Length: 351
Ligand code: FES
Ligand SMILES: [Fe+2]
Image (cartoon, rainbow, N blue to C red):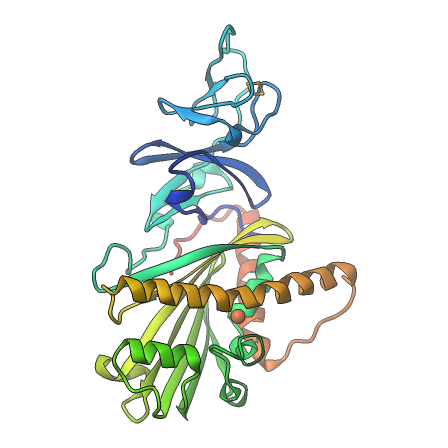
């Protein structure tokens, strides 16, 4: 259950710079490849000759050459040539709209006629000296909506991430969820607490004391089809919290692009964009490593949760106040899917 007439992050450029990449997105098996320095392409990962995966081939002069018997595929899905054969009658395969933007390759797995690059959300931090970004990719054997639930309810940090960003005050502070159109926002503001280890590290990295009380915030924003951006940070207590001047706080945006692979698996592109010490590359690497470890802690939980749900599909689940963010986000996803079925025009995405 996922919208298909929309842009998803398919991969990062480095994944296709050397050779083609075979990746399933929304149940579509796709071969991604670089046609030229500024051009990327995506076609069905299926050679019309004998069904070999085209992603096992290579790119030559902008054509994707099948690694089995040398068929040359064009980026429109039509066979261009094959040694010793006339290819005019070869059946075409599907090709997919793709765009390279903001450090990602985006794909439109649905109706190609509706794909408009202008609908891709703008990323303010890309190629911007005031920001730094670092991130990674995890493959997770779980419905992508379980990750949306996870990110829209950060009470789990107290338990799953107890040694890095978790602290009991998260549990003790109620969160608030509001829905604005297709955007769901769940926020929590904690005051006068001690920073957990990850944020102590970030305070030190920004030359701020880490042994004094802070105000901490988490503002999770879901937008369709499955993006979750989370404003996070701490400020020395008494300076205005979220609104404190720059010199009293550390803050960043947790960036989550969640791309469905199948009904029960996903590609999870995670990262962090920050505005403190953006030129410090060692800090970017340190944060990326820390974040990678923290997010790896969620994987086993989600995969085992998915296994339970598949074993006992008929069991009802509770919806508590802490679940409001995920529940509302799923409602938005259901609405988008219903609108797509009724033939509504796809909407622009917002980060
Ligand atoms: S299967 Fe691709 S050329 Fe034969
Ligand atoms: Fe988590």
